[in-house]
Figure 1 (spheres, rainbow, N blue to C red):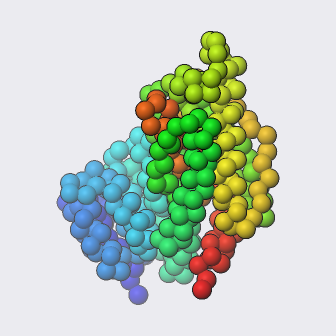
Figure 2 (cartoon, rainbow, N blue to C red):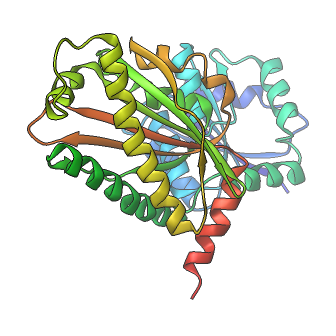
Length: 335
């Protein structure tokens, strides 16, 4: 049975070139789309096993297509074919679930190498690969449950901070997702907003679940935090480090306790480790990112009303923890 293949590119020349480069021994049924919206319409009908996707297109670009495929959990394998060869573009498409990346103009040998590498031409291997990619995602029900559990836990953490500082803590909706390490790196970089930051990291473990809690605090927050905590004198590096540890202990400890209570677990916490002071977020994590692969990540941003205080808390669970957490959540969903 022919493999249904979709080539999505706004250039007619590029579409024809990709089609000509497909291996002669691969039995395929090729169709074409001129933009991402057309591609999603076809994929949504269950008519695409393999998608060759351009990035820069009108109506709906390649990044938006990858995001839609992830969000809807559409069962297709995507190989990006693009002239945008920036390292950031490569990292971004891989973090959004692309199988691989080929630069334009497409090379027939490189394409054949990628197809062989992943077993895309084999019906059995292709089906297994698609199933594995779907398994790595969180379905909408599980994501909603993780989000609600986190809402409760971060509310408890916010309450402690509010009582300690006698302020109103703004609580956002937490972001819950399974991430590749490159996507996690991008998420952390997005926190920067061109300002200096300081960070603390604390490991935790319990009953088949382990990970790291990271607290990133903008340096502009220290003055107001010191005032609210009645610190006197100059804000030396030592005083700022003490403030960072105080906030970290409150937020990390409370949110982990809230999660553990709801999941009927107990977390043991390691000693907090300073990632750095007065640095960019990307610099803070450079030496740590190699320890993470695929993770379940919960991102929470706290703010304090009428004060220039913002901090970002990320809970990064190891890949091995995802199955245990899913089982815990499924138990909560049982009637």
